[in-house]
Image 1: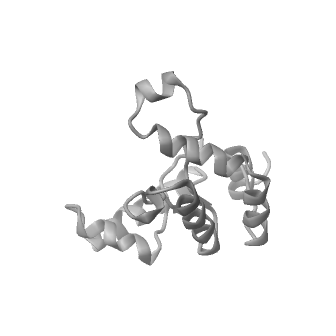
Image 2 (image 1 turned 135 degrees about the vertical axis):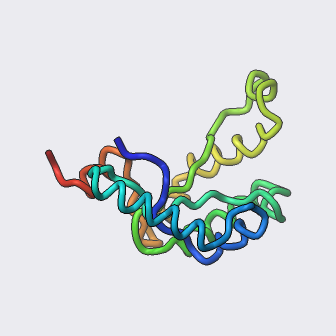
Length: 141
C-alpha cells in the first residue's frame, strides 16, 4: 500500500523546519530513510507532499484562497506530488465538528469548479489516484 510520506521537499518548505525541533539535516536523513525503505519493500511513495498554508491573505476570502491555490499549482515541482483537501458542503453538522468549516467549503467550491481542473491541466499536472501511483511506481502486477 502506498503511504503519504514524501521522499523530498521543496525549498519553500524549509521554513517549516525553523519552527520545529527538526533540523534540515534530520529531515534529509528521515526522507532518505523513507526513500530507501520504500525502494527495498517496493512501497510506492510520493516525491512531494505539499500542504497549503492558511496563514496569510488566502484565509480572508474565497477569491483570495482560489488565487493562492491556482498559483500553487503553477509552482508544483516535477514528479509525483500530493496536496490534500477536505472538501465539504456547508451544513450544520460540518459547523458542529470543525472550526475550519469555511475552509472546507471553499475547497469544495474550488475543486468543483471546472475552471480549476482546466487550470491544473494547463499547468501540465495529471491528476492520479493511489492505485495509479502504485502502477506508476511498481508497474502492473
